[in-house]
Picture 1 (cartoon, one colour):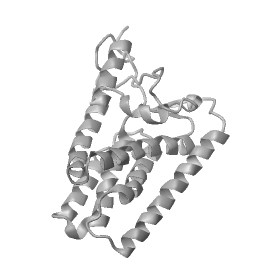
Picture 2: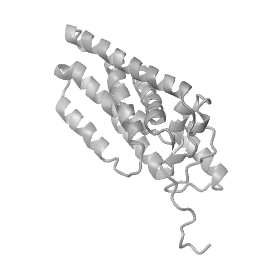
Picture 3: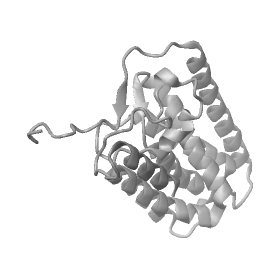
Length: 227
């Protein structure tokens, strides 16, 4: 419920207590990820608690409940929390490299990490799972519902990859086999290498001159509103 609390707090500050369906993104919030303020390290995580309207927030919360709860019931809150945080961090780090002029708001990186963790769970425990194929199809169906561009595809894809790799690292194994151990080391190497590269990029590069926001602000007030 942290995203909801942060969202309503910001609404009361910038909109007089009125929660809009879409936007605006609170660009001056100390929580939003901004490339020109990336020395404020908390922004790489806290952008996930800021949303561009209650529709954006509601979708992310519903998906978190739909895909996160079944995973948490099997693997526990700590493991699922680690996957979620890895997706949020991976999303902002990837956007800082691939979309260096983009500011971020929303928990989609963490949501896609939870979705991809279902794939990691299936790779590790498919033979011990009931209805494993159905679970994978359901997760893919939920992911396909997020079709409201423009979004930071870099953050979404990176969140999913972070969820897959960290899921392979931290989720429970039904059976320990040689191929699973090799997969564990491969996932560790991939996650560590990508994270290290993104961190070094942020340390060595200069901030962009012009910024864009994702999700973008709708025109407010509407152009034909007459005021």
